[in-house]
Image 1 (cartoon, rainbow, N blue to C red):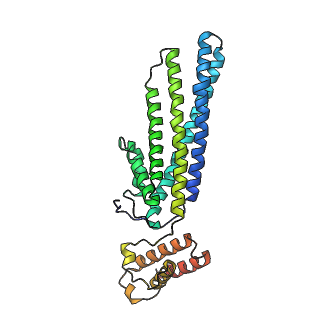
Image 2 (image 1 turned 120 degrees about the horizontal axis):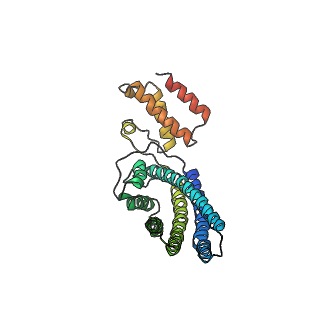
Image 3 (image 1 turned 90 degrees about the horizontal axis):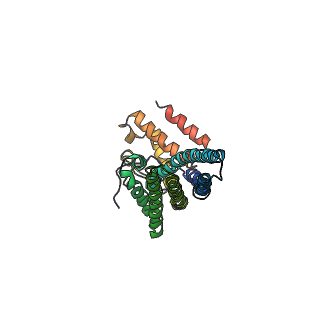
Length: 289
């Protein structure tokens, strides 16, 4: 697989984002079922009854108002879910180099931007998630899951776009619109269900992998210790940087302190050092400036 040219600062927990996205996707499934009922089952009956004269104008108006309310809730929930899903995807891509699966071809920012590029969004979001899934799981089943998710997502969107183009010149046209809109909720629900499965599968695959050290030009310029332990190497690096080692005197003080602070934050974020030790070492570093 082609490797990306970007770098990620550090590994960050992504479980909260994965759970949040999954919960919101689940709410989308529930709302899709409700909309499918009111549009595809209750809607045609109301319209037929109105044409026959069995349904009063007020009842038809109430149905339209309820449909407008549900549609507004759907739009708001869709936007919030999209934000949560993209936040999870951004961090999942960012964490990939830190769990030993290589560097995805597209950076975290690029993986999000592709969703908003005209024409390209029909393909690129699928390509990005497929690449991430292959790196984390190497499973054909997961690859098939990504494909089902994307086909269902496109089918739902295309059905809704086509429905918007239908003329509304008769009750029959309205019936057709209602049935097509209800049909669009079926692949929408399938896309949401497979997205939940995809998010949790990739999050589980990522979280069960050990976090590995990722090289960078500045970090590689420092002589590593002989101890293979990542934690010990980081501790030795910080001690080297905050001390008066002659090998560091050619580096500007600000650069040395910035690097050491970055290492400290990474260790503190992963729970390697506690808050007291973090503040102590941080104070020692800042005193050099």
